[in-house]
Structures are given as C-alpha cells and as structure tokens.
Picture (cartoon, rainbow, N blue to C red):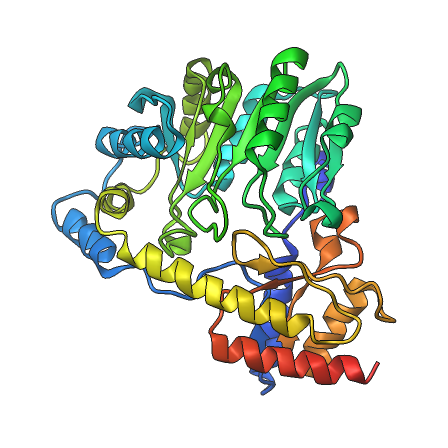
Length: 387
C-alpha cells in the first residue's frame, strides 16, 4: 500500500513502544517494574466518577457543541482566571478529547509550510512530530542541565528568525521536571511582542509543582492576545483515559479551532465534561494528597539514583519524571534503556526519545508505588555494577 508522503513526517511516542515491549516480556513471565509511562497510578477520585455516572443517567450521552458544554467552559474560565490572575471568558475556552488536539489543531490553524516553530528539546515528542507533519521547520531549543533544564534566553534569541511563527513552552516540563521562572517568562514575553510570534504554553503539569509557584506567560501584559494555553484533567485528576483537555485561545482563533473540531472529532464526550466540572469545583483533597505522595517518591528516586556510581540526577521541581545523567556509563542511553529492561526488568526511556539534546540521559517516571521505585533502584544498581 502506498501512503501519503506526509506520513513520513509523523513521529510517535516511544513510551508506548517500550510499554508494549515490557508487556510482552511480562507475558513471557518476566517481572517488570514500569517507570516508562507518564500516567498517575492513582484512581480517579470517586466524586468525579459519580458525577459522570449521574450525568449518563441524566442523558448526557449525545452530541454537544463542538467547543464544549457551556457550563464546563464557564468552570474552566473561572479556574484559569483565578489561578493565572487574568480575566478569561468562557467563549475563549475550547474543550477537546485530551490535550493533544490543542497542539495539533493550533499548528494546523496557525502554521504554513516554511514557517518556523521553536520547541523545547528534550521535550514532549509530539511537538516536533506535529511541526514536521504540517510542513514547518522544527527549531529545537536546548534545555540545559546546568540551569536545571531550563533554556537560556540567549539560546532562544539565537533561534528566532524572521520566519518564527510560534514558540512552544512547557512548564513544569516533560521529560525533565524543570520549570520556567517568572524572569524567564518575562523575557520570553518581551521577545514575543518585539518579534511578533505566538506562544503555545503547555501547562498540563501546572498543579504538579513541588517548589515555587506556577507562573503562566498568559498573565503578562499583552500576552493573552498571543498565547494559547493548554491544560487538562489527565494528570491532575488521574483521568488519562477520560480524554479531557482544554485550551484558552485568542478570540480570532476560536472559530478556526471550532471548524477543525467539526471536521475531525465533532465534540468531546458529554458526561466526561460534567465530571470535569466536578473535578474543578469539588474537593481538591485528592490532588493535594497525590502531589504530596509524588514529592515523597521524587525525593526517594533522586536520592537513590545519586547513590549509583555513574549516574547523576537533579531534583525536578515539578511533573513526575526524573531525567538522570548517565554519560559516565559505558553504554549509550538507548543501549542502557534496553539493557535495564532486559537485564533488570525495569522499563525506562532513552533521553533521545525526547530529542537530540536528550542524548546521555534517561527518563524515569515515578508514577509508581514507593515500594516498586525502591525495588527498581536496587535492580538498576545491581545491573549497572555489572557494566
């Protein structure tokens, strides 16, 4: 079968490939500890599940407006207004089945062939994949370990050209756990206004921050008009399979996004949106408890990795990933990830799965029990000692 040429430009997520390989090994009887998938290991809070069930019983099982149910858009607008300290109206909110469509649709609506899009590297692999798919030039912006996996503003300045149309930022960040400071964001905002480009701000991990206070670039003067804010319920409320994301858009973009939704997925599931209202307006105790547990696991995995010879790991400020430096070990990061899966039964990801600047690192998700993390650390220690 002959495929369209554009399919050659579409990438994937290595996490799902490694997960499938790990599950295959489990089927063969091998015990695997999963540190490869970025998925909270907590159950969706019961009040959210009950809200969805009640919504189904009350008939929320049909089509709804392409951009989302008005009551949910209102709840999101109130939440973003409060947390980002800027006035957001419900008609600036678009609901999507998961947050990935925000990336896809925003680039389809804004970016032409030959435009340039700057994205973080190492970073979520879907950024580069979609940039390439729409025919734009993907310009990597290195995140540097020596500045806690932020990027240097001078590197951003060097990456900007007359064809720069969009900058993607992600804070807190996947895969490194780094986050951008208020000073970083202020410098970025100044550049965006001076050089006339838009920002796609991926804030899906905004509630998973252990140190400092989350800052959003949309809050800075003049940035609401040139920022697309991406967020959702998958990580904060352990709702990955519910597929519930949303974006805040400059008003001229809303109609274009609506047309893309109508031409693709029609709308987002009705009863999940009702559950989404309960998630935002109901008790936040489960979020507080989950973040506290993630912090406990983060401290344990960072401390443990730093006791293994040849591995150095910085303590991430947010999300639920660590990105240890393994450059002193005799294997490449890709070879090491394969070795740890086969030899130690620990599934991790190669840093190169997140871009060329991820070379020499691994990504480990600590969205697993503390007991399993401690067992994984011991297995890694033994396996590395054999190299």
